[in-house]
Length: 121
Image (cartoon, rainbow, N blue to C red; front, side):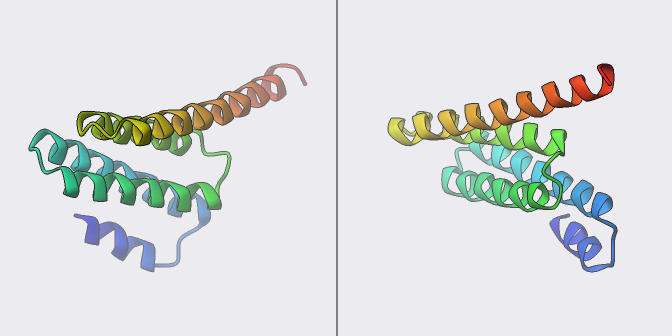
């Protein structure tokens, strides 16, 4: 399935399509990480959560205003924090939770700006 996303990204796409595909690919890595966590495959789960964040970062670099991708990155950081907490890597979990909060702060600022520009022109 991941190969399908990679194949699509090799084609010439406009930025919006590329960000959409990258965001969905990031979601797929996050879902796989969640499944692997439930199967107690912790190293594999960590790898896929990390891959998810890398893909989201790539999408965000192409479209910094993409609210869905920012939110998905925040969720992934939370899930990775939960994984670390379950493995008693509490300091790492704390750092991930704090990073997730920062992502949500950025997201809230973007939504606030969007709201003001849409309704108070």
